[in-house]
Amino acid sequence: MRETCAPDLDEGTRRSLDVPPDLLDLPPDEMRRLGHLVVDLVVDHLAGMRERPALLAGDPATLRAGLGGPLPRDTGHPAGGLAAGLRTLAATAVPHQQHGDHPRYFARVPGPSSFAGVLGEWLATGTQSIASSWGGGAGPTTVELVVVEWLREALGLPPGTEGVLQSGGSTANVTALLAARHRTSRDGTTGVVYLSDQTHSSIARGLLSTGWAPDDVRVLPTGDRYALTADAVRRAVLADLAVGRRPAVVVATAGTTNTGRVDDLDGLADLCAEHGLWLHVDGAYGGPAAVTPRGRQVLAGLDRADSLVIDPHKWLFQPYDLACVLVRRPGALEAAFAMHPEYLADVQGGGQGGGQGGDQGRVDLHNRSLELTRRGRAFKLWLTFRTYGADRVAAAVDRGIGLAEYAQALVEADPALEVVTGASLGVVTFAAPARDDDAHRRAAAALTASGWAAVSSTVLGGRTVLRLCTINPRTTTADLDGTVGRLSALLAADDRAARP
Image (cartoon, rainbow, N blue to C red):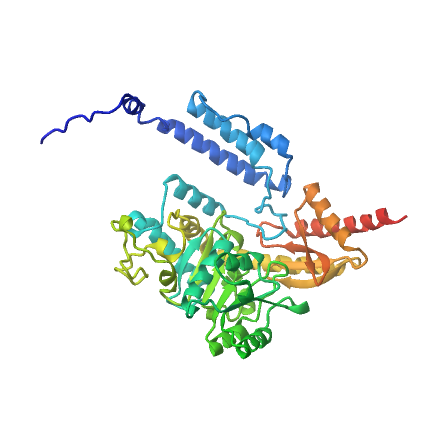
């Protein structure tokens, strides 16, 4: 075979090529040793979590002193620097955050993860797994397609439902709503989309950021039920039709962040079918409750949604980040997002169709959302289902529902407290009738600062209340006893301090 002549390169280029090719590599034995160190640090974190604060913010100057400094240049032996860096991160960065996997983290929506999920995440990250095109990642893509199908089955959605994994509920809801807009737009207009005053704030932000006109985003009141009714939407739809506006999309919530309430999914599905509207359901936190019998009863009508979002990094026990868009209309995602540039021609698997029924099931997942570079997010959820089974996962979800009911009973037994909204899909809110809004905020802040538990306040009907979200299966009844008891005592002490 004919040899080629060495190219004539400038001195700077030649010098750069003299650098050893293993410049960023470590010997296998060093990688194993350092990998074991990471495992030890993570297991130590998990094993000792209960004894540490559920949330710790930290002082900016102190954190900068421990983690900042000038840009590192020559650090010496990489393995030694790596071990020291890992220990610094574990000692300084990791403690100063909200620990959503802490058994007494009840603020906002916790994120308890299973160890099987952690291992799946490590494997995907360590092998640079990518689930974008079929040709570039057939294995990770297949894992994702299998996980989406497992989720469909576990949630009771109809066969043929397609999906794609995303980073979180914000991007997942935007993805679903862009697919809805592509399907429902007429003559370049988006039509009206209907929300409620309990819809997650990220959805309105996403709608406006992606081109919906503010006048086409209707926010409807829910009153003291804190749930959207079909009658309320019907009145708004008829009013818009009467003035020549075009209704297009209804956004329902399956488990609102404030109260855990569920909108009238069946009634809204009937209304959408009557008027040819797209029904999108944001079930980011509450949707996974459908894997349990009593959760599915509360979520009746979920299977009739045109699109649904859930966050497995909330109530399906996955490490951050992991959300899922599920669409009952096959091909709707590809119709909205598919692209076929020349530089991807070698790895495209689905052809121009792009759907799951494309070229013998070869799916290009980058054609189902705005993400082109897509890491293999599905390994962790696949491994969780394979490790524990759907029944055990469902039991863990059901425990979260029961824990909120237990917390409600504790509040009802305390004469100084009252339930504001009863337990619903792992959320309960309550207040001390004799205390003002500031007292409730102070009690939540004081308990969180104490390190015992992290709780949050919210506003319902113009009144500040305390809120617990109890979806961590590691939480015990003793954890709730201590949390409700401490909050009651803090509110009582606040009253005594306020007296002249």
